[in-house]
Amino acid sequence: MQIFENNQTVATVYQRAISLSICKDFAEKQSGKVSMVDHQGSEQENRRRELLSVEVQAQQEKIIAEHGEEHFRKQTKLNFFSRLRTQINSDFDNKEHLYHYILGIEDACPAILDILSASAASVNQIKDLAASLPWLTIDLISLVNKPQYRKRADVQVTDAKLALSYIGLDNLKLVMPTFTLKHWLPTSTAPYGLMKRKLWNDSLSIALASRVLAKEQGLDEFTAFTTGMLSNIGRLAVTRCYLTKFSEMHKKEVREAFEKKDKRLHNVLSKIETSEGLLLEQLIMRSSQLSADLIEKMHFKRLAITEPIFDLAYADSIEKMHPIAQLVAKAKAYIAFRALAKEELIDSDESKKLLSTVNLTPAEITLLKKSDIDHIKLNFN
Image (tube, rainbow, N blue to C red):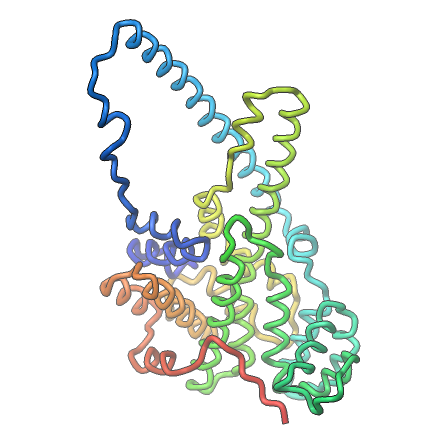
């Protein structure tokens, strides 16, 4: 987001929040909060005898050999990640591939959201579209069969169209953006086990916070909620693309080294792990712009979120943003602040600068603090 990149302190804080979404240890390293290792009792500290000349010579030869091996490891790792960066750059240049294959966005998804944004929308208008999405029918049926929403304890709904009728239009305006983004989440974010959950929780909280602020200002709550929810679509795409491409390339190159009987290369490649730094670089560099590109490809006719999403990516001040984009920017700053504060990774000066960048007022902060922006509440009659 350009608005966070204009101030060095704010940029650093926001990048730290993104680092925290990858993993806490990485965020702590980024903030300089690193555990010190106690070297007392180490082999070097405890050596008391003088080495014989033969041992000195042997040690020197070992150091030279280890230096050469370390250089080989570093170069191999450097070359691998250079090739990986080239590959993912190529993937990000192909928006069609990202849209249809990395995220797997079906045309029915934006079509349903578009219908829901119309004042004359009805459940009947989306029944056939919803039925065309197998994953959505499963989610809808599962939702209405939850104990708190079931009409009768002894009756289970098995038909998606009937489930839609039970859910109702007002609930669908929360359910559809939520289920849609959940479907686009990475299947796995290993080795960053908590990243998938953090991506989901952040997106949901940003959407709910945007809705709360929209209601307070008399703006359209569905538009604000959907903009907030889908504003992270670029982050999902970057994460999926990076982790998938790393896994594919790593397996391929390890297998090739094995088949060539290159034990030295095979051993080094086998120990290469994903780079948090490269993932962070791609998330910072691409996420917001990619969100704009992907939303533009959805060709919304009624749902007015394309301009706000572009403003979130490219506007350099809050005043230049669409009113809905302003709300979402405030929500993003608040959720980033809240996550960092919970882990004690932000100080008071950084907090003030981050929140003032989006003109988040004390009254709005109080409103968000007292609002439940972590859970969706549906109202079934």
